[in-house]
Amino acid sequence: MYLNRLSDDQRQPFLDLCIHAAMTNEDFDRTEKELIKQYCGEMGLTEVRYEPEKPFDEVCGKLAECSAAEIKIIMLNIAGLMLSDNIYDESERLFMRTLAKKLRLSRDDYEETIDFVKQLTGIHANIERFLKR
Image (spheres, rainbow, N blue to C red):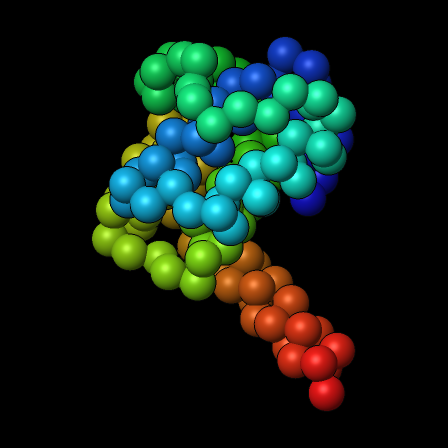
């Protein structure tokens, strides 16, 4: 969501970040891979990959140069990836808190990001239930 607003220079680092995020709890599952594929499509990337090209700290350094709005977009999508399997374990929470610090996202914005994604996930689940009735 809103990934088309990222510049071409930000898209590969964002993809690397997605991969690092998905690998956090050592359960890089089909749901996460499918969402990364969707993210690539939204960004206009024709090559989908599931191995990072750059280390986490380097990726964070590059993305920390983004505007405040771009950082919020990044965090919303990474949170969406983390919550895509309906499991948000302690390793994922730690990853998100670390990422928020590295990208200089305030605690309030971090908490609001997680709340928004949880609400959105709930809405999607309700729509799916509605469609299946």
